[in-house]
Image (cartoon, rainbow, N blue to C red):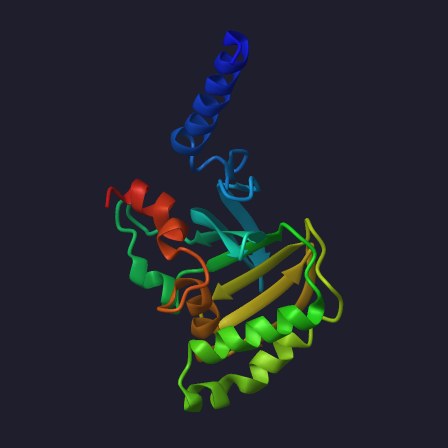
Length: 211
């Protein structure tokens, strides 16, 4: 390999590492999910119901199927009041504001999305729990009326009181208010049957907390 190419590759790697670890709270910093190469901001800000929120990245991961990259996902959490108090338990509890950002790496037909999501909800609930939230699940699935395309961005927010808000490409899809539905939705990525590596979705936060 020519020397100038090797030096260039090393420079890119060093700059990427510095951007991720050196300024994690800077919203201008983009953190790259390594499997898909999709980059996410290290911080997100939004307003909901008259309240302003600033959430920090806890980590990124990718969902793959066979050898195909389906999407990259980034998770954001409202920072603890004191530094170093990041608690993974907060990821499946009502209270701290949370956000999932999914960017698709390929086109996916709408029927396939709804089928897989329904299976994911069923897998993360008991039969009685699923009956309790089925209305909310079907309401969410009904929002997927068209295929998602490569580059589409799907956002899910879980705010206190079991409030869930859904967006696609910056436009509101719908909302729900049910604590069990919110917890089950998050369990798809953080529960026992996670569809991605949950440790990767917590890696940034655990590093910052010194865990």
